[in-house]
Image (cartoon, rainbow, N blue to C red):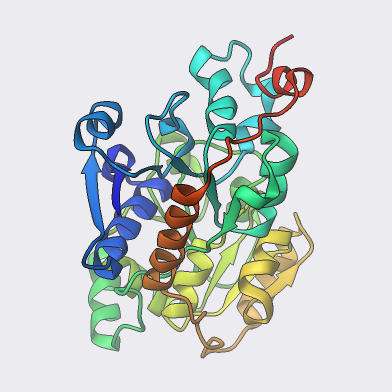
Length: 331
């Protein structure tokens, strides 16, 4: 089987970029002798010229309206469709994304919570959706004390700290980052992830910026606990990575986090930032065992999605016109 994978998001620093890079590497490690993965930043021309069997877009932005071969799309979240009021003048591309995804032979999502959203908001058939969780990278494992101490010295971090991981480019509603920074606590709070100027106005926190995987693993390993304050988490990548590094996780209770982390994390009511910090300061190390799921497992499951997409003889069933128009945001 010859698969063309849209590699455009792989250059990004966010969650989609990380997913694309790690999945691509795992697909190549798990490919059969007769399988081939073509990495392309020009999907349309590559699919037509190389005679590929399946096209995989690892993000909604890359979904084709008219794919020359069966298409698989990874949908990480449908937050944009839940917050239509934030897009006062949606572009044509934004309006056509749901229709392009509807035409996919297979759709991959990271959790059952996202699958439910995809059925409700994208009007997808449930039997075309495959739940394939993400995994911790192989670089995520408990780092020795010397490595943790070296990172603390380089970044000027305290010896004991709580950790929050995620993008700090925008003050996203529902993440409670400002409240997390401003709530009294006993331990210092370190926030890791790419930043914009507004993040540097947060009080009483240490910002590390974006780190390489090895540095991120040392940061997890040295933390007393990871805190997840967001109510919009659709997959707990940071939680999975923290557990792989032996660090306890305390999170606001959401269906997706419950689904992924289960009994391996401690939960508080959504939005209860004070209880979140109190619980995090009280947890003890070591953390529960990490989740036994690897990128190789995810890649093998993805190869199965490709095979099912290639074997389909029926066309994707689109939503009725009335529902599709509502999905596309037409007024």
